[in-house]
Image: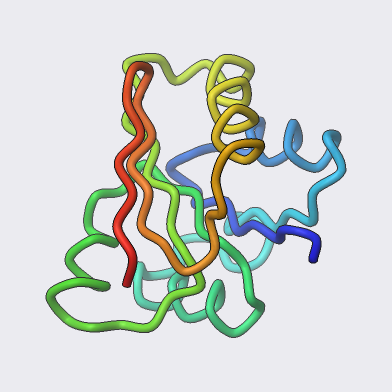
Length: 116
């Protein structure tokens, strides 16, 4: 099954372009619905079977405290916002881990994975 991603606006269009160029099915929130609420973004990802890639920690609260459904979330917490460097970290993660229906925190030196 080919992975599908929804890239949050705060994470940036350039990362979505890099993922698309690498062959992934990618939708950028800014192209779908600019300024969408976190709840709308999470629901769109779930409806489309997409894994949300975001910099926004609020999604953890929506999923774990408010029990909102999700196909999976990759929360990027790197010191850099450089899309090429972030893409490198994502490629390492995607080659080594099943990211479906998990909440993943991706850092330069660590990956934390929680099942729903």
